[in-house]
Image (cartoon, rainbow, N blue to C red):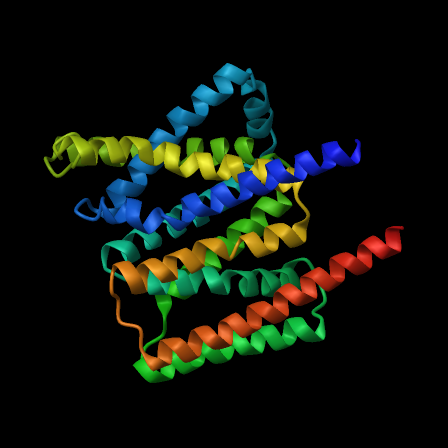
Length: 303
């Protein structure tokens, strides 16, 4: 590949990555518009319409044989069942948080996620921590502890979002399938329960679809597209970009959530919040610097 082609490849990857994280960044606005609908119904619609959207993509690309192969591998199925439950829990808690004006909590959760990923790597992948990683973990822990002491209650929403998404990343790292295959299998595994629940609430008269306004119904249907598109964009970006670049891009989403919470939704932002976020941002700086340093060292060893 020529230098010019590599440059075009990286530029396209950067565009895909930024677009994916921008879409995720606007999710509070999207799901705030659906806050009148029970969160479990929103998640169920998200799953069912994702299956339909992904099925169309796989049908046009002729890749259903890959899905069949994944289902024939017992280990892959077990791992994807676990990852499906984790991501469904993450979606549910996120939607509940948005509906209850806890966007700052969701922002904090996704800022904490990299630290959870580091800890999971230590415990399950036997990865060793560098000095800067240890410092970053202590800074993040200090921020969460200070916020807990100030309010007298643990930030459960933030921690559940961080743990479920960090654990989801771990299982998707272990399982040997590509992004679209994994997402399709996950949603297929969840779809009988989601569809069954939607049929149940429709029959007992508590279902929201299609009883809501046309705009709300359209948003519910498009939830599948909104779920799948950024994941597919992210997969395209990951194939074209260095890990360090992806690492920096991941902070776009929680930063946007934070700005939306404070500037658009006017959620309370106290001195305790400020102290917590400053400590976590300091930890993220240490974490990012260490990641860049490691990648540069690895590249020097190769050449």
